Length: 113
Image 1 (spheres, rainbow, N blue to C red):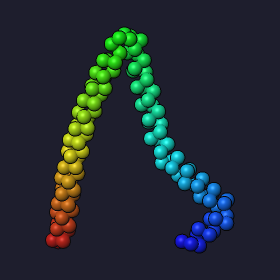
Image 2 (image 1 turned 135 degrees about the vertical axis):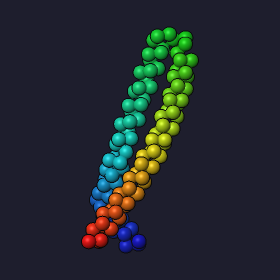
Image 3 (image 1 turned 90 degrees about the vertical axis):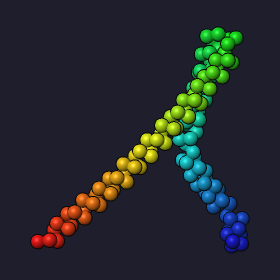
Image 4 (image 1 turned 90 degrees about the horizontal axis):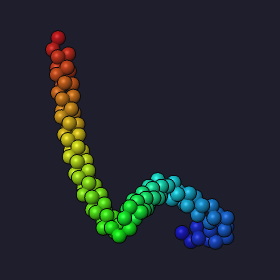
């Protein structure tokens, strides 16, 4: 460890290269997350602007109602996704059992003659 510290302290270009590589990796990991966050901010601004221009006095109430609706619908979608995942898992297990049974059936049939 001390050897690495001595090397990095005597070679600042190596430190810059390591830092650049780390930043590049972080950038690629979070690129999609940043894009999604920017898109959500733009959508939120558009919805807020729409309600503000539609009726400035009711805008805060309309925005709160929209946020509540989004949370409710998101919860419903998550629950539906969980049910679909569980159903897919059950179908996968059944198909795996059927494949195993079919394999056993055909291997037994081949062994008899």
